[in-house]
Amino acid sequence: MNKIALIIQREYITRVRNKTFMLVTLLAPLAYGLLIMIPVLTAKYADSKKVVAVVDESGRFSSLSLTDKDLVIYNPHQTMDLVKMAYKSQDSDFYILHIPQNFDVYHPSGIELLSRKNAGVFFKGTIDTIMEHQIRDIRMEAMHIPKATIDSLHSDIDVSVRKITDKGVEASSSGATTGVAYAGGFLIYMFIFLYGSIVMRGVQEEKQSRVVEIIISSVKPFQLMMGKIIGIAMVGLTQVLIWVLLTFIITTIGGQAIGAHHAAEQMTANGGQRMEAMQNAMSALGTLPVGLIVTMFLFYFLGGYLLYSSMFAAVSSAVDSQAEVGQFMLPISLPIIVSIASISTIVQNPDGPFAFWMSMIPVTSPIVMMARIPFGVPAWQLALSMAILIGSFIVSVWLAGKIYRTGILMYGKKTSWKELGKWLFYK
Image 1: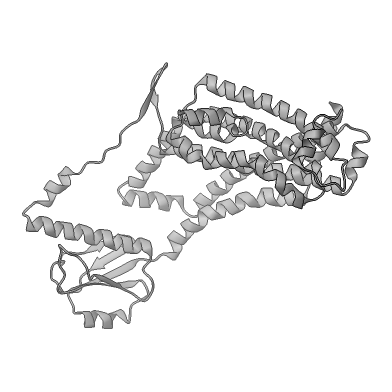
Image 2 (image 1 turned 90 degrees about the vertical axis):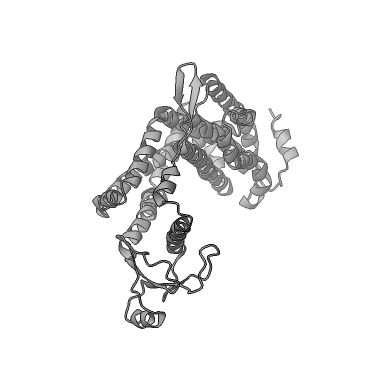
C-alpha cells in the first residue's frame, strides 16, 4: 500500500504542477463565464431601439401602434413614397411595414417589412405575432364578438405532477428535474472520457519511453496501474472542485458587472413574468434532493472513471502506438456511448424496465443512474446499482491487472483480442 500511495502522490503532484493543468483549470471557467456574459452584453449594448413606420394602404390597421423599451411602431399616415423619402435620413434600425391596398384579412398575404439590413428571425417573429393579433381583432369585430369575450376564454393551465410514495404525496418531475438529469448524465460521460484518456496517454508515454521498465523493478505492475488510476482520479476531483468554485465566482461577479439591477428593472417592466419564471425554476430546484444528487454524482463519477480507466490502462499497455488503440477502444467505449444516447428515453420513462436494467449494468449505470436520480429512485435499486458497480470495478481491476502486467513489457508484437484472452490466464 505504501508503494501505491507513493505512485498516487507522484501522479497527483506531477500533473497538478503542470502548466497545462493550471492553464486549463483557470481558463475553462473564464471561457464558460464569457459564454454566459457575451450574449447578455450583446443584448444590452449592441441592440438598439427599433422603429417601425406602418404604411397601411388597406386602411384596416389605423390603430396599429406600440411604444415599448425596445420597439416603437407608429403610423405616420403618409404614402409609401413620402415614407421612403423620410427613410433615407433614418438609421439602420428604421423599418417600413407595408400593408398593400388589396390586403384580405381572411387570406393574409403580401405584407412586407423593408429595411437596410436583415431584420433577423426573432424580430420578424415579433412582427408576425403583432400582425396575427391585429388580424384576429379585425375578424372578431367583423363577427361582432367583443375582444374581452375572447380574452376571457383563454386560460393558462399548469398541471402539477406529483408522485405517490410510502411517505405520502411528493413533487414529481419538472423542467428543472429533466435539466438536472441531462446535465448529470452528460458530465459523467464527459469526465469519464476526459480523465480516462489521460490514463491511456500516460501509460502509452511511459511504455514508449521505456520508463516503465525502471519503475516496475521496484513495484508490481498492478500497483503501478492502481496508483496511476487513483492519482489521476484525485487530479480530476481537484479540477472539478476548482471549476465549480471559479465558475460560481466569475458568473456572480460578471452578473453584477453587467448590471443585475438593470435586469431586475426589465423584469418589472415586463410585468414580472421573467421574475416569476425564475422563482418557479428555483422553487422546482428546491424540491430536488440536491445532497443526494451531489453525493451520487461523486460516487458514480469515481466508480465509472475507475471502471473504465482500468480497461483503458489495460488496452493502452497492450499496444505499442496510439494508432493501434482504435481497434480496442470502440468495444470498450460503445456502452458509454449507448448510455448517453439513451438519456432522452430514460427521462421520458425513468421507472421503466429499460431504465432499470440500464442503471444496473455496470458499464452503463454511471450515466443512466445519474439521469434517473433527480426523478427519484427506490433506495434498494440505488444500493443494488452501487454494489454491482463496486463489484464490477474490483473484477475489472483484477482482470485489467493481468493484461497490464504482461502488456506493459510487450514490444514489437501486434496484439489481438485472442492474445489478450491468453494473458488473462498467465501465472
